[in-house]
Image (tube, rainbow, N blue to C red; front, top):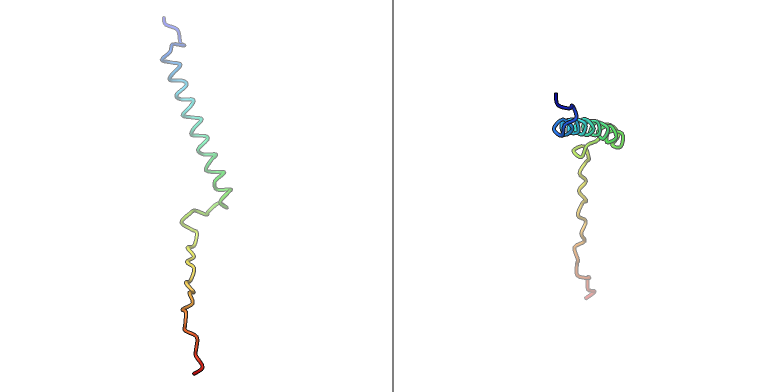
Length: 65
């Protein structure tokens, strides 16, 4: 009977552990993101404010002729 801790089994166990850890980290990241953004704000919810163009048209000074 072969040993339980062969290289192949160790690699499989490590892969599963990494997968579980990254899944948990992703869930925690989403929680923190929601707290930071107020729970419901996304980039799509930000209003687009376009500044109005208020350029002055130069006029010639009135001459007193």
